[in-house]
Image 1: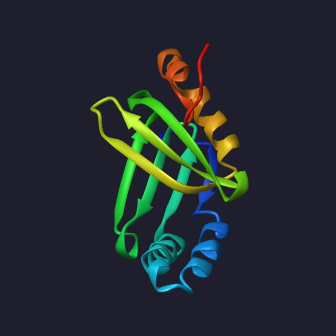
Image 2: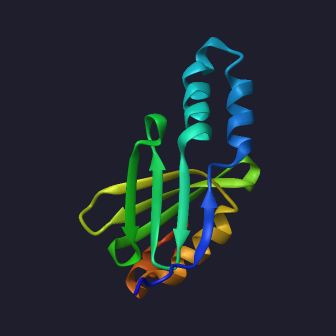
Image 3: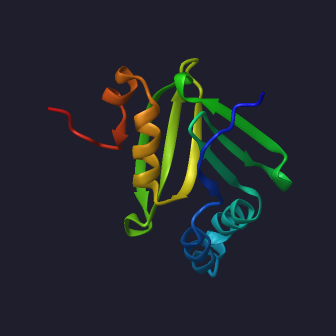
Length: 133
C-alpha cells in the first residue's frame, strides 16, 4: 500500500522574477540574468509535500533533488521583488545546500517547511540577517 503525500505547493518560480529579469536584459550587462530567468521559468519546478521537498531543474528539467525534512538543519530566506517572492537556502545535515530561487509566497512556504523541521533546526532558521535575542 502506497502512502499518499499531501501536496502543499507544486509549481514553478514566481513570474515576477522572469519579468524583472527580462527588463534587466534590455541592457547587455543583464543578458546572463535574463537567460537564467528564462531557463528557470521554463524548466524549474518545486513540489513541496508533507514528506519531502522536490526540486526539478537544470537544462530541460533533467536534474531532480529530493530532500526529506529530517535532513534539513537550517533554512534561510531572502525576500525579492518587494517581498512578493523570495529565495530560500536549505542547509542539509551533510553540509550541502539546496537553493530555491524565486519561490512564490515564500513566507507561507517557509512557515510550512519550518513546521516540519526539528526544534534545533527551527531555532537556527529564519530570514537572512535576523537578530536573535
